[in-house]
Length: 147
Image 1 (spheres, rainbow, N blue to C red):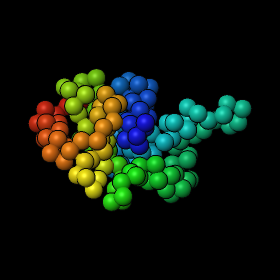
Image 2: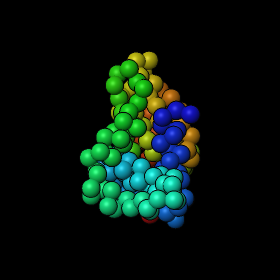
Image 3: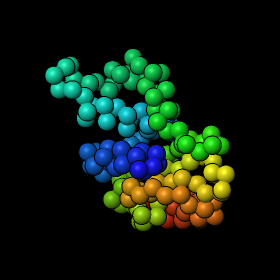
């Protein structure tokens, strides 16, 4: 499973438990923190105190933000990282026009061969050409999505 696919799978789990809504946020780091805290709360050992994401966000956001930045790094030798398409922040995944063609997560730089790592709203990850990436982003902007 690629990094983009893993992030898409985590986001899909989040949406499933939040009535189909993708996480909201003003940045990839903020959305990444929400997904990170969601996964921590789901995986937290039940024999200890409950995980409180609100408290963790206030008390440890710098530490957790570093974790999120590390997880959102791409293996691309150009040094890219994955970004969340902010146009999808808070959108209801079931209302997207073409989820299998809507790019949810993408690498901010192409690989040396010109391909770009992406993950679609259906959870599928792929390496696509720069031309196909531009086309997918234009299609997404043109079609839009509804809450």
